[in-house]
Image 1: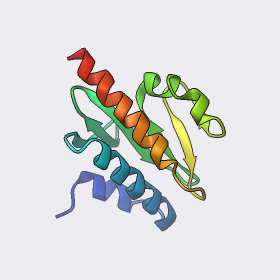
Image 2: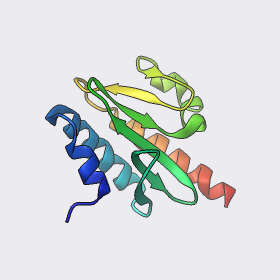
Image 3: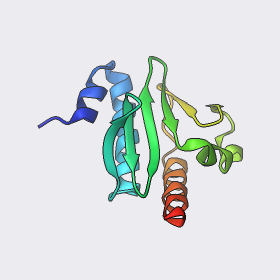
Image 4: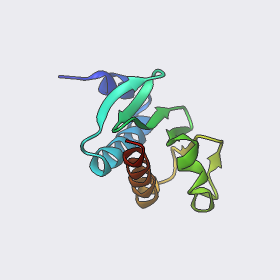
Length: 115
């Protein structure tokens, strides 16, 4: 049975779907206890509070690890378009899997410390 995240991913072109599914799998493997949901009209993960979000676009996938998730990894995110709370990963490039895992792990630890 399809969930809301599956329905969200299916609305995009195949290349975007592939990147979204890869990003989803990276997040789920790093935070298996996180609750998956739609928040702000995009896939989101909650574990001791909101953890990370992601979204699909024509030319990139957006990854939203909150401002602290960007700020603490800014040197490693060089080469990617970033804002205060988001990073864009181009559709035509491989996702930086180890970096994404590192950011998600950081956010898990950060949320747990606020409990």
